[in-house]
Length: 456
Ligand code: HAM
Image 1: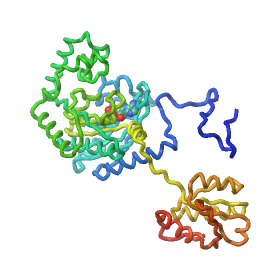
Image 2 (image 1 turned 90 degrees about the horizontal axis):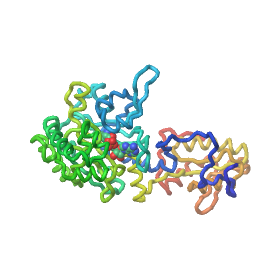
Image 3 (image 1 turned 60 degrees about the vertical axis):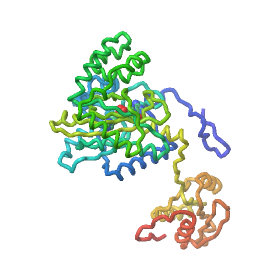
Image 4 (image 1 turned 135 degrees about the vertical axis):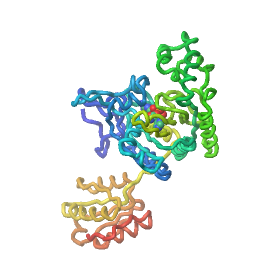
């Protein structure tokens, strides 16, 4: 059956398309980012790029595929991301590869591999890229998702942690999304082992109240019991020893400074002992960004990050302190919609309409000249009837339509139609370029002309 059509013989956009048996379909958990979504993505990405570059971050893109061992060693073999969610496969050379589930490990690899250690420190990098996790898809959780991230490598100072949270907060502020940074410190090599022993003893004595996953975590990753969402585990966690009470002096001093700097930067934060993060590489500061007043469930973190002072050393025997953050772009865009953010949609300035084959040819030349002057031009050159062309011009909300028909071909003229008033004027074809530039400069921003003005 053909799709339904309206009076103008246009397909009805709102009707769900019919599915034919055997037709290719999106994989579960994957999304197409359709033209209607793009203005939101463009607005998000351009704000992120502006915030990052104005703070001295340089853009990095790493490959989608990496050796699976990169993430096993850094994110951690026993974490959900590696153990349950990573897409891995053996390629034709027999190598075990992974679709990147996150970017901090790749950025640390690139830092070492490209000798960034000899660049002036710190090295500040940012990215906007897609990642893959084979998780159970639901609202806000996809199998391919996008993150923007900031990473600062080669700086141990607590002000770096605070500035990263500040730049992350700036992205949400840009779209009027109030946020709160839930922050904690999980200590370092010096103080964490002692704390983990206390924590393990505490949970062992309450093992029967823990869910099956947390019983396993007790052996492999007891910190993660603290952020388990099961109600019984949550209740048991409430009285568990807290990391902040067991930090060594250096970690406590670092954490106190981070909080002071967040205060100076007016980034709202909450001390939250349940923030432990699901990746093994973190040391000291860990944080997650939530919408202020929004929920705090598994899918509601807008982003997360922290310090990872031992990660680079783990890869390359060089001690490089570092910290970073990544935010989910789909979750940011959901919040933009909830706050009724209206992205700017740019419409063309001019529509070129034509009637008859000689007019079409002349209009093609005009189209080329106007485009080379950076004027946004729309057309329906494949249509013959002027009515349907003007309807298209109306839909696009252009300011002016330029029309050439048989008479205009004979007289070497062109019609300018003001689409708002409907008034039409005949203009000498040779004068159309300066004339349209003049009119556009009155109604909008003047398009910048190249140094050499092309001729008609
Ligand atoms: P993460 O907490 O795993 O951290 O992810 C950061 C953010 O990415 C999440 O808060 C969420 O907004 C988004 N995200 C994660 N998984 C999904 C998913 N399946 N669907 C949609 N959005 C998702 C990291 O990835 C660390 N690399 C962050 C970091 C950077 N730490 C230091 N530097």
